Length: 284
Image 1 (cartoon, rainbow, N blue to C red):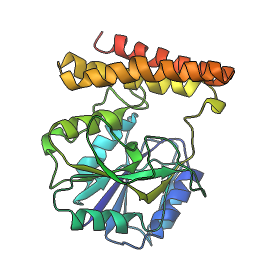
Image 2 (cartoon, rainbow, N blue to C red; image 1 turned 135 degrees about the vertical axis):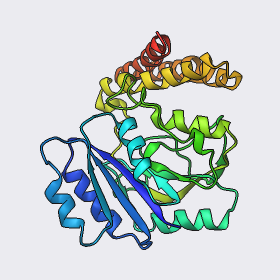
Image 3 (cartoon, rainbow, N blue to C red; image 1 turned 60 degrees about the horizontal axis):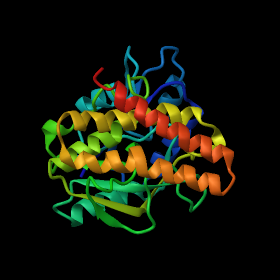
């Protein structure tokens, strides 16, 4: 199985170099890397050129921004059966692609595979929804985050395999482009499995110690995708309305009050505000 890694990048160079080094060390070699370069200053040209002798790279420069649009563009360039969308500030454990291909090869019904997201040089989980136990999952418990998802193009509904350009950094609603896609594919019947033994490293940016600004921006995407499926009269999305818009943020705020943690309280409050802002704004 050939793997296509579609990486959209803007503004990062050192982190991109670290990722390229990690994929160069992969034990599984049948893959291509498609870099959708949204920089206008040649910021990464020399870095990419230095890896072309050791990696199969398509360096595609575009004149637009927006991560969802860039990833969509990369899908059209991909030649592999398995496709994934690594972030430009993540890194792969050297066995990632080998384990991914093994999972798809041994489970003929598997359409979506999600890896664990870990902090760099640590066994602690990073961003996204993670668990220490491997499991199948449905839209009621979506696992992972965008850069940990792998898709078998032969086993998904290809009509549903696209990114909604309203979501993600550089779009109308920051964040949630991966969850919106994942929910749509799971709704269409795709089988999905989460395996924390497949390790992808990423800095933990979704933490109250880093402030509230990022949470406020990214949570608007969560509210917007909930509203999108609400507008489609998807009754299953009621679960996320109750969980994401009421129960979870309120419980987190109560816990922060009990712990006398004002930073965590503010973080949870802005999470709630962002979700409701996105929910009310979508389709306006």
